[in-house]
Length: 341
Length: 99
Image (cartoon, rainbow over all chains, first blue to last red; front, side, top):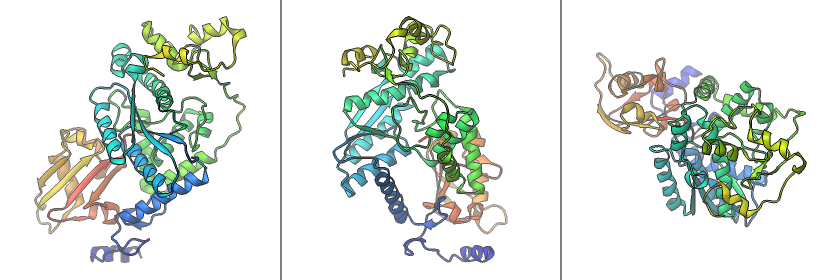
């Protein structure tokens, strides 16, 4: 049968899209192995996303929603699909684009141009928040000070908080971020390789609470400061698997989803950072600890798991009686940067 | 044979940051048509200026590199056996780096 198929291809017999039977197929969906045309792909892709949104009750009418926009393909697709579905199915959402400028010369500048095009194309208001404004440091400055090692820790911690601060500026109820199946499968695999069962259980969730930073890609091209070889190998490995069996990637995600392992790990109690007012399970949030290290010329502060000499360790001893969540105060937030809330 | 080659998703960095290449490829000696297999070897020699391992693995593209021949995924046209014709547009996009 395979030989027969190959023959008909060689003879130039044009196959037709499995769904509409009208047009020339342009791709094979790894999910279903169907050969389908461009138009049918858009249709099933958008409809599947709509079904996921409805099934998981992701939004309520009247909500303000920020789309985390990096200028890369995933967030650009997300901006298009969500603004389209919002109109088509009358979700009643107020949508915004939210971008982070990490201050990486020659890298983020280009992708921010793409986001500005998205702003015009989809008519969505754009808010850009920069590390420079929030923290007083660009990633270029940070790398100059600490070198290439550990700079991803700073970038990741700052980004997660910057997204939330941008969300506060826009007064949105929710942030949505775009991820593709390859990313999620890679993250599942990395969490297994690291033995991080808590993150493994969380990383495939469709919504996240405020249970701390979730490491996620936000890059449109490979970051110039982090070739990240380990992740790179994991990515190549899953793409190799996919070549042998196209469904492999979705199956890895399925495995991740089904790994709901009961752990005895206590979820950290949520409070607010005493320094900036951002949510934190410690006295100081991770961003403030890192920032304090930068400003005091001790960039190793807050890196790694050691508690010795840690700001939170010190604070914890001094203020043991005064633990527990505090009310977010607007004034205390200002200290973290020059942005006005 | 006049062809248009396009590199995206970071692959353009391997060919002097130029995304679109208008090229002229000759048929290999004694062959009647140009296949993707031959074209990849030609691209490797004539277009890729650095780190060819980011583009090729073995005799084909690295997993994670999308190949489109006239806007159609080459998986549907026979991958390496795909026959290339005059004025075809071949697009290579890396999906390996972020989104």
